[in-house]
Image 1: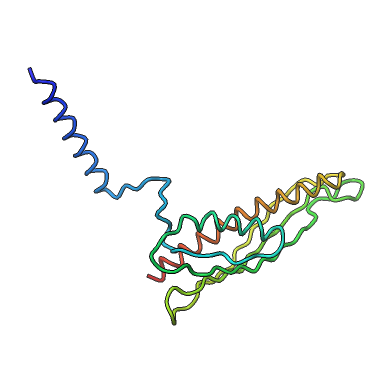
Image 2 (image 1 turned 60 degrees about the vertical axis):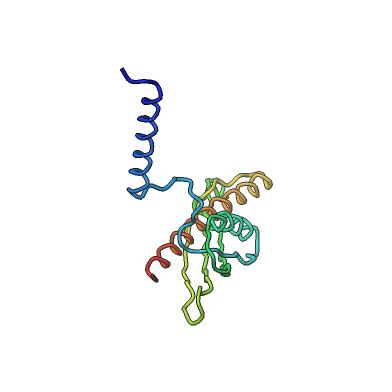
Length: 166
């Protein structure tokens, strides 16, 4: 029969072995704040309501990026458009598509290196309403959804380009 202190020691030893095994296999937390390898960056002002939403989403992604270097500047030129996708019997638009295209440039990390550039685009739809305010609210919602998708695509592309540059 083993004493309680021996059992505690065996449990502690088992936990230490388990922790070592998990860290040795490359485990990293899902909600890690170590970033994606892009490095610290600052997002330049983007004009318009869609630009405001996009900058907020890009800032959210950038908050996770860490590094010892000075932050690089991410500039984005935004092109947006609304297009009627379905026309109702009365001749009014029943469904509208909102397209957001972002041309972005991330300043180089070192002097002489080329900047990281790219273009990403997304289209989201929304139901058009007869009430003016309701339509404005739906437009703002479409802009927010598109901004979230564009920010995800920009950072996915920056991660890809950063990995290829190494």
